[in-house]
Amino acid sequence: MTNAISDDAVFGYARERYARIGVDVEAALSRLAAKPISMHCWQGDDVQGFDQGDNPASGGIMTTGNYPGRARNFSELTADFERAAEMVPGKKRVNLHASYAVFTEKNPWHDRDQLTYEDFEPWVAWASEHGYGIDFNPTFFSHPRVDHGLTVSSPNSDTRAFWVRHGLRCREIAERIGAELNDKVLLNFWIPDGLKDTPTDRYGLRANLLDSLSKIYAEDAPHVVDAFEQKVFGLGVEGFTVGDQEFYEGFAAKRGGNACVLLDTGHFNPTENVADKLSALALFFPYLPLHVTRPMHWDSDHVTLFNDDLRELAEEIVRVPGAWEKSLIGMDFFDAAINRVGAWAVGMRSMQKALLYALLQPVDTLKELQNEFRDTQKMIALEQLKVMPFDIVWDEYCRREGVPTDGELWDQVKAYEDEVLSKRN
Image 1 (cartoon, rainbow, N blue to C red):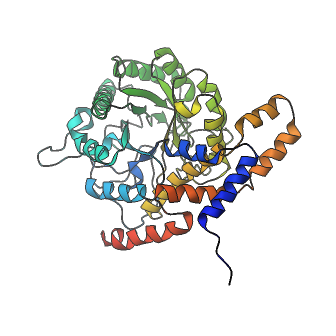
Image 2: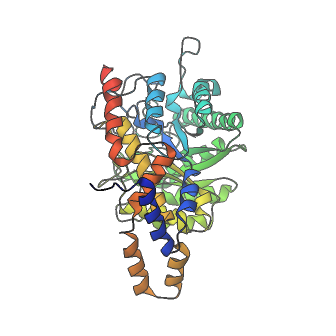
Image 3: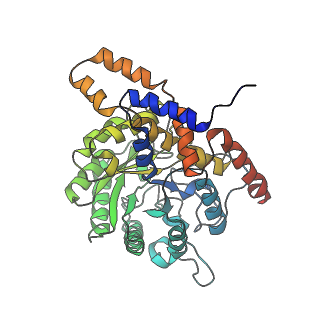
């Protein structure tokens, strides 16, 4: 009869292996457990929201697939969110779009330019109960007032005015949420605005955008971190995107204060390295907000996986001085072709894995090897890290956090599908 090796003994072996290369595993686990990741509500219902009826997302947003069990209302969406969060280690926030305003008989529907804090009180009460922080996003898409693909940059003054009012209301709501939770709320500004074909007046549309932003962000909001998210192109706006990286970097830098640019890992040309941008932005901005997704040939928002791109992004968050504190990490994927709760769990866990992988590296040693031009030794050290007993440390982290290990995850996802999701029409 062979004696099984205990989990404690296996973890002790891994901890000792990392200690040999100067890594304190316990310190890494403690640091990771305290780092919140913002879990996006829109994975659970295919970005449909509550304010436009049962309609698919539009305005450069597309969710493909029809897997059974989509959440259809606030109670179903929060229940699914909670179940997914129970499978993910570490601290969580909820990333919320304005299109998820909760309307009831006592609080009947009103349009996006008339939203108030009361429309989101159920979210705040729920988040407070579960210890989640909240991040917020105006919703400039999936709405009939998106005119020829344009919102706040439109040449139509009435269109611009509607969306400026929406932006103002959302900033007021985010400020109130932050005050209620005694927290900072990341308010992320993203618009789908652009043209299908080559423009003949880029400047005019961008001047409209600047004028609109100047109105939306005229007042201070002490509980809000104002972030601006670019896009390289989108469905139906292949020829030109109004809000590009250069525009938002210029606007955020000129505005100062808490203003910063948000990097969506799917919103750049395929040959661009998003991880490479963090060290540049860290030199100039107070925050490094991220929306993490997995583009496949284009901004397709596939579920994030523990791949090279995600690992390099996490390595920069760990290696760049101050980036760990400045980084505000939010997830942004949506897949209707697979179990949505499972997608949430896998994507969130992949981000946690990548951060842990980066924390389990001798950062000072690697920097020293580069600065002393000991390139061969650095290459050998990096290759060694790839075969270190990382999986053992990850399993231990999951056990300490009271969530399933990877080998146990599918059974829990399937059980929730059988007990809850399969019973929805």
